[in-house]
Image (cartoon, rainbow, N blue to C red; front, side, top):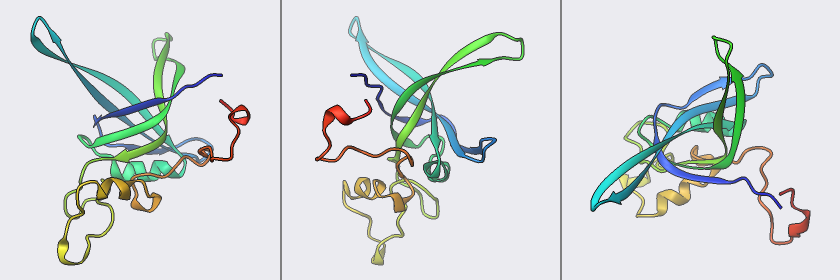
Length: 165
């Protein structure tokens, strides 16, 4: 059995950019900074790892509308490598996260799109209680998450031997 799964929480390094492939398929790309703190000789050090994230299909439009530079973002996907040739003719390899799920964990400001506050505010201007927004983000209608068209989670009746991974 094989498994290629990556889970990340970090901050978007740039606004998600929506583009289209030659065949018309939507793709949204953004960079994600994931920080790690550790101690060396009693002093705290911080390290930042950068990831390139690609979201495809219907989810790409939601990602492009909700992920802004600095947004706190959860990404679930698979790690893939891509080979390309630069202008000097040198073959290069890059790693990219192909996202199954992208959830913007940041609250949005009044009038902004995206974030887990994508629903219109409730009557009286009340904000959801802690944890309520995260549940809203998991809803495809919230604009923060829509599963990739070819991604179907296993159901309780699925036999693990029949799963593609």
